[in-house]
Image 1 (cartoon, chains in turn brown, yellow):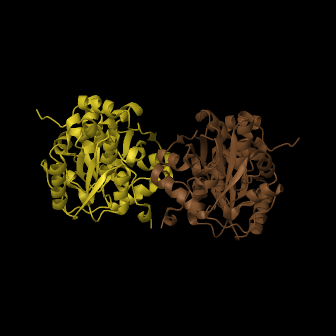
Image 2 (cartoon, rainbow over the protein chains, first blue to last red):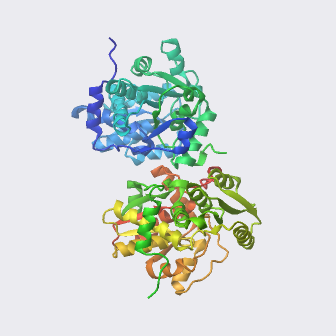
Image 3 (cartoon, rainbow over the protein chains, first blue to last red):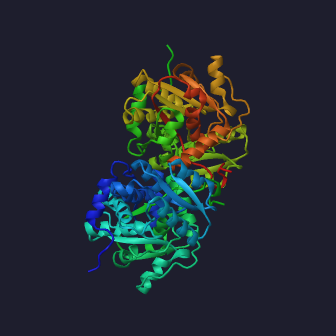
Length: 319
Length: 319
């Protein structure tokens, strides 16, 4: 029997661990989007979470679960996205240092955000090899513990708390749809939801320009992400060794959507729901509006995770 | 003793009248904005109201209070803004026609929105004289009842329901800040709040480029709006005969803010609160962040009305 990275118990424990600091984010509904989707949608607003994304849950759980002696030396990661800010804030709340390796090409606003949460930014060349090397060096120099953005049991357990809330907040919910990048969010959700409500369906929403999860599911083996290209810049990563088995066994189906569909969905959420979401957060909305999803029978009540809201307002894709 | 356009009784009655259809909009808070304002702020999210603005409350109250024989002939207004959509939806809910006179220069998206709510758009020349003339002609031809956007007792009573909710939702609230254009919203709020909680302060927030209320308060007489120029396109109107006496007697002070302050406040709400608001809705945020307001003593808990969220996403002012 396969052992997965998290269990209902570890996810429930994560929820208790992070409860003092996370928002139990609200559920929004929207009649106009219900009409377009031909079913009742319930939007889980993780764009209203601290640091503007669900990433805070996983990073916080990983930081708070460190033993005191390890925690004292701090944490390190390499990321230019929401995980960087999430880890910086989590470390600040625990009172320990956070070292964040970021490519020199990262927008100033993202570096400033990490510094604003009390993190230390270490610049590096904009290649994955350089990022990994510099992060290892920082870990060796400082003794800091590496907290990766998704492929880690405590991170996955933290993200799974989204599903525990969804099951409480939406009576008789029949499916949950969430974006897939590295798979941390969907894995946590699938493990929590299927264990607690076995009849529920879990769908991954993936940009067609970064579709390693869809291809891997079809091939029944983990395939690498090749040269991803999508506006959903939070979903460029490929699945990892912890997340792939969960996606393989517990995610019912992956729905892929084009960048045009993502932008159209993002615009609808801005216009009709008055919520700011980032392109990666719009991917699950695009999925439920797709013909593939609309033609599925049943599923009268569907939770849609709006995963984040950190978008550069100077470069919104609304022409 | 001055008689005002609305009373606590008429506002409470309005609340009952419109209750089946309006959202009791939520209160948002934001630690980052609290720090900038140096006090605790409670944002009343009327951008999440039907049609994306508080205007639905007043229009709905006016439409629902019409006697059957008058209502049957429909309603008419001239507006290119949120009142047009609000009236169209209100009329649809009552099952009566709505005739909306709109200048030929109105953006297509605004005309489409009125039509989307089932309203009939009558195009006219883009002058106030033409709008008023055409609206009168429509009223004569059809027998429809004119429902103006703000200077009407039932409209003012409807907008006042915002304050009844704020007083319930925010314990020990000490002040309410709302935008001033024609004064319908601030009048309703001031009449409701001062009657129900006499110790409360009510502040109007006004663009310095459309500052007839500030000038009128200073002069103690109603002065006309001269050639208004502001990005807050919902606040171009001047006070009317019903709203001026309330602003004169029951609004504690008008805070004026520049367009730069309005855009900066709007950006903060997008970035930190992940809410879409229109420039007119950002004016009250700009007011509480102004030096004039920050230097006021006391007022530890302040309600800030986010009046609307209907903004053209293709023309956001974020450079």
